[in-house]
Image (cartoon, rainbow, N blue to C red; front, side, top):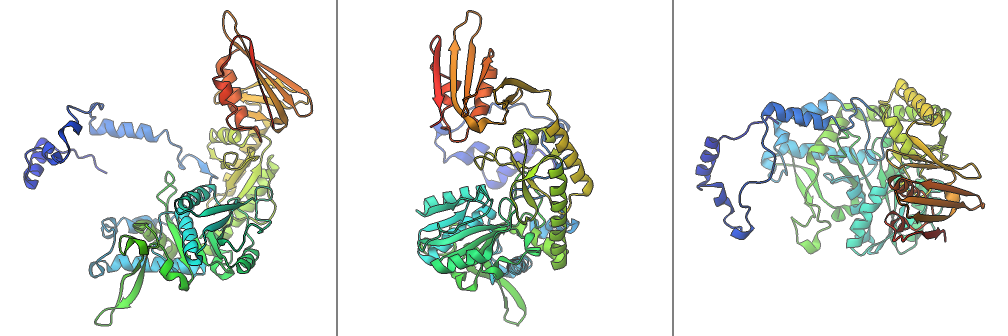
Length: 555
C-alpha cells in the first residue's frame, strides 16, 4: 500500500465535509474522563524511505520460502499456484466486493460462488456444498454441531489422529453447546484400531482423510460402525488427496469438511484460510452458512442469487443453524480459479506427483537415519522417528535452510523424537536429496553447542543445548527418581541433581551455574512421561533453605 500521509489541509477539508470543527468533536459521545489527554507515547514518525527500510528489516527476521525449502505441512501446504489466480482475484470487481446481497448488481460474484460450490461438491462426492466457511478447523466443528442437531444427540466421537488444532476447536465449540467429546486413542498405530467408543449415544464419528499422520483411514469400517449406531460419519478431507483417493461422499461420509488452502491460496503466516463444507441433500436445511443457487430471471435468462441463509443474521436467532456471519469469499474465488485452471486431470496429476515425491522422500530420509514410525499407505505426509529430539533436529536443519517438519512431542505424549514431514508436488529430487544429506549430517554430528552434563551407568547420555536448554535424553523415560539439593556457599550457589533410573543406575549432575541448572530442569520437565506436569515449578523457584533437599519420585 502506498505511503501517502494526510496534510493539515487534507484533514481540514475532511472535517469541513463531515461538518465538525475538530477530530475531538468526533468523540463527544465518549465521557470526558475516559478520553486521552495529550500526545500518545509513540516513537516519532519516519519518512517514507526510512519506514520501508525498517519494515524490510523486520520482515527479514521471518523465515520465508524464498530462501528456505519447506517440508512443513500439518494442515497448510506449499503447493504450486498458477499465475492466473493472483491476476484474477486482484481485479477491482473482486477487491471491493463483500457480500452480494443485491443479485442485480452482483451476478459475477454470485456465479463464482455457485461454481465454487459445484466444484467442491464434485471433488468431495457430495450432493451440495455451501459458500465456504472460515477454515478447516471451524468447518469441522460446525459439522459436529450440525450432526448433533440432526440426530438430537449430545455426544461426538473423534479420532485422536484428527489434527490437534481441529480437535481443540471442536472442544471449544462443543463446550459452549454442552456437547461431550470422546476421543479414540490412535497414537500407538497412528490409526483407529477399535470403534468401541462409538455407541448409540453418539451423533457422529469424526475422522480425517488422510489423517494427521498422513495415513489413509478405513472409511468402510467407519461407515459400518455408524450404520450400527445410527450415527453420522463426518470426514475432514484433504481436497488434493481427493484427486487420487475415492471421494469421501462416495465412501459413505454424510458430512465432508476440509481446508481449502492447498487450492491456490499461499501459506502466508498461517492464513488466510478457507473452510470447505459439503453434505447430503437431505441435510440442506441444517447446513451452516449460506448457499448460492442458479435460477432464471423474468426474461428466462440464467441468474444467480442467495438461495439459503440459515444463519442468525438472516433469520430468528433460535432458528439459526449457526452464528457464522460470513464466508471467505475472496479465498473461495481463488480456489475456484485454481480448480478451473488445473482441471480434473490437473488435480489428479498433482496428487500422483505428491505420492511419488513422498515415497522417494521416505526412502531417502530413512536411509539418512530416520525410521518410519507407522506402517501403511500415506499421502503427502509421514511420521519420521529420529534418534534425537525432533525439535533439536528441526532447529539444526533450519540453520541449513530446510524447514524440516513439525515435531510432534507437544501434541502427542511419547513422540518427542517424532517429526511430521510433508512433501508436495513441487518438492524436487534435488531438494529431497539435500534434506536427506543435511539430516544425516545433523544426526551424526556432536554439535558444538551441546554440553554433556552427565552420564548414567547404563550409558544413557543427557545432553543440554546451552542456547535454549534443549535436552536429548536417550533413556529419559526410565527416570524413576530426581533428587534436587542446594548448598549455601560463600561465593555462589551450587545446585545438585541426582537422577535414579528404573534399573537402579544413577547419574549425578552437579551444576554450579543456576541458569544452567534451570535449563536442565526445564528440559527434563518436558520429557518425563508420566510425571506431574507441575513438578518443575517446585524446582525452578524452590523454597530451599540452607543445605535442604527436595525429592521427586514417579508414581
